[in-house]
Amino acid sequence: MFECPRCPYGKVSKVTGSLACEVCAVGKLSSPARDSCGACGPGEFVFNASSCEECPLGYYAPVPLNDECFLCSSGSSTGELSGAHQCADCQAGQYAPAASMNCVLCVAGQYSGSRSPSCTNCSVGSYASEVGSSLCFDCSAGKYAPVLGRAECIECEVGYQSSSRAQYCEACSVGTYASSTGSEYCVSCATGRVATSTGSTICQNCTVGRYQPAYGQGICTGCAPGRFAEKSSASVCAACLVGKVAPLWNSSLCEDCAAGQYQSAVAQTECVDCGAGFFSSEPGASTCTACPGEHQLLEAKSFLRPISNSDYTAY
Image (cartoon, rainbow, N blue to C red; front, side, top):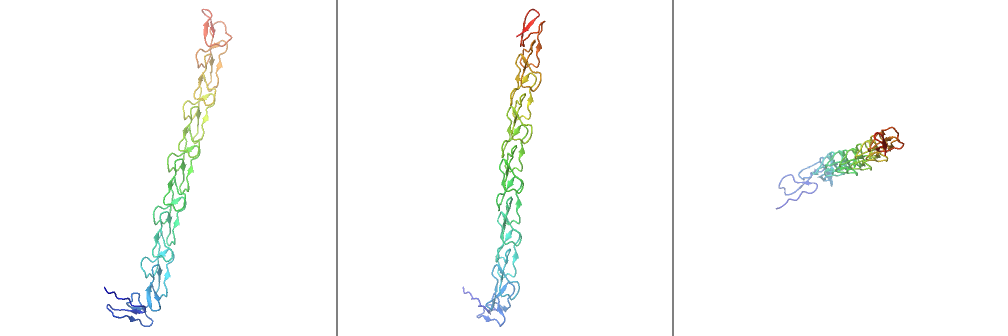
């Protein structure tokens, strides 16, 4: 198929099927389409002093009779059509360098306001999960963003916590724990339990013979002599009852006083021998019994033997 050539600069063809191009009159310029003579309009510029040409992409001409086209400033663009008489501002979440044909969406992890020449990375502790974001969001408590330009926040590991907008997670302090990921705060250990190190994921029970009466502690305390903790995770140590003693620290049980001894007070560390003329025949006595008979014996004993039908002696 035959293709008609375009009229050269300064000449036009005003009707279809023309065999030749006409020269524009003095002071007139050929239009970009080469179909009329006149003055250059908005979006056009004077070329070679003889014709009007459309401004290329990324350039504009705001008024008629422009000798040149102007660059679109950063943060604006012409779109995909040439011959622009103005540049359109980029919306928030977009950007455009100078002389841009189109505004471009910010990638995830970045944001922009309107008329932006570039996008900005989200700061540490914040994120932007969508392309074309106009702002970044703070990481919620239990999550963190350690570097610039994050598209999502990271959950804290077990044993760690964070507040909102965190750059990093903090290890649980001694006496506290976090058993799940994404913890907003660490939990204090209950009474009878402790967390001995930072970053704990569980609390440990106090072993038998030891106790802890307070919340959020890192060490168990041994039961003092005269007291005991029979079970683990004790919050208090119980006092030994009458007839029983605990001579050492960290006792899990109290010992019965032996036959021939007694203890009448609670929370004691040693038993007392029965005095002369008194005895205790069973372990765990809280008192000694006076020997029957007419004579008081001089030595403490644990049982009696008859002297006669009515008298006894203690052995």
